Length: 602
Image (tube, rainbow, N blue to C red):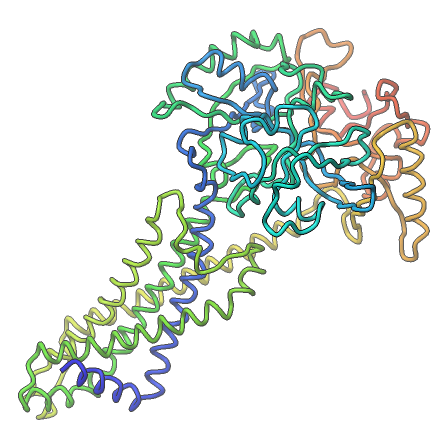
């Protein structure tokens, strides 16, 4: 009997080729779009889920207040915070610090192997056991305890020492030079590459102890309450209520900072679960990749709408042919077919259409996968639908359930409608669709068009918003300006300014170059801050925080900035000794913040 159902269903599909093509490919395109979007959604939701201790790992965030106003809402804080929290609170099981060590060049062997643009961070040895990054060589318990010790990712190890064919045991103990540091760094471990769904992405790890106890220390002490350039992660004892722990942080801040006496700011701390670090961050100074939960869940809703529209379209097309198939139903019933048999016949036909559409959808996904990956700048595949995300495997299970439910509903309704025709009325030519059926089909059509129009309007609004933002006045001229990253082969010294000027003058000689300037940051990127700024003659105790850039004397002209008072920088303002720098250019808003009557007063 089932074979008969299949043969009959296939015959009907072949008999109405155009109708079958529209039905199958309409469903297939909807399914393919849904699968592509859900790949991205599940990838975003899977960030950091590979960590075994993810439920207990938190990062420390720091809000800084001056004059009662929030001046920093960031993920960086003081180097002593993690240890102080572990010492003060028994709920804290471990802590690890992370600090960018710089991007630079590595020279290995006898200078014959050079690799550039490697990003290094300094971390505590506890970082290796807190996070789940598998070790391929070395001892995870002691790899980063000594100065100038490094742990490389497998990809970095292959770049520096050649392809190791997966065996990195011979690299432990090897040495290399990082940038122009006179002290060689020793390889004490090799770890697996950072997964793409890790919010932390580095090329190599340097022992934190190098910062303060190496031959040329970058820091004065292991734990400090002054510089706040460190990211902190803590691991709580399993089962700890982090909200209850956060409630103790006000007293912690008062105990260590005594209001604003220590740092010049009122410091407030709170914790963010590692599972929320990627999608739920509104912090400054992010160390890793971040996304938007609003965008991800919005895309999820769109994916559901798209597949729902495809199924509704299939139901509408199938029931629209009811008049054509009414006589077929009438003849079958007269010849002895029961309603159950007819339902099974139409169910098989609908299931074949859905399954063919699903197979074609998979093919469409595979064909468009590369283009989709280039669009979102991420390497995804069908496997991303089945990776563990923040809800476990709920998305994969939900996707399977959605497909089964959608296929069943889209198959059952047309089968139920078509099998309900009364044979006598049909054969007499008096067939009419029921009022309830007409109302339902009209409702489905209206709903389908409503959702489609909603998606189109949403797309137009987003496009216009992006175009509006792109066309706003920035206050600086960025047209025809390109950023050039110069080679950095030496560290900052007394000759740096002269070398920088020479490089800039060479750039100016190039054909088509109208001007050039140098700066310590690219315009538009997040700037550094200077805290505790106040007018020299002001004894009120009010301190302010200003963002700043280090620029040369050509910068203002190159970017078309308008000087409304005072003068631009001169070449005589330069000095490699920081304590001899006395000339600054303020923005108009900075003069207001500092309390000057007008822009000319300061």
